Image (tube, rainbow, N blue to C red; front, side, top):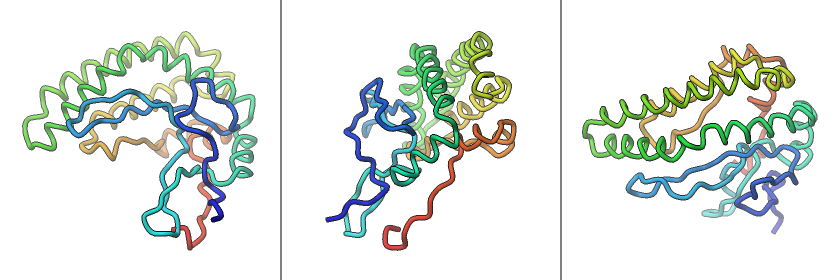
Length: 212
């Protein structure tokens, strides 16, 4: 059976320094169990998503960018050197927020469980905002210290700081685990040059009708 052109061909979970795919964008995924308690983190890709095949009840891991050619094209549009720098910065940023990550997800799980059970989520939300505030302060320091690196990839740190704040607010305000995702708002997207806008919001290829 012929596999879909947009199928991700790489073994998963990805290794820490995986670089076989030019479009790879590491993202730490922390799943929650049925009691909304965080499980072990898994390294995935920002572009990886689940799609259905033409056969009923069959699924596969797809690349949102499309085929291998599409992944290479996106990497060239953003800039291969820029992507390498961004990956390095993402690893540094991940290290900066690592002390907060597990506790944030524990609190998020408590909040989601309260929403599910129709009980007061206020205490968990308050604590979540308090911890997120501490993490944001840490990230602000990170942006200031690495401002030259952000300038090198044409990401103004004021726009990056605003983007981080919007992402954190969405994380806190989301009431369902399935909705914990993020897309850059238009007003912030316009503050970046075109290659960086392409990085944040790639053109999504049209899928064949049979695959929808």
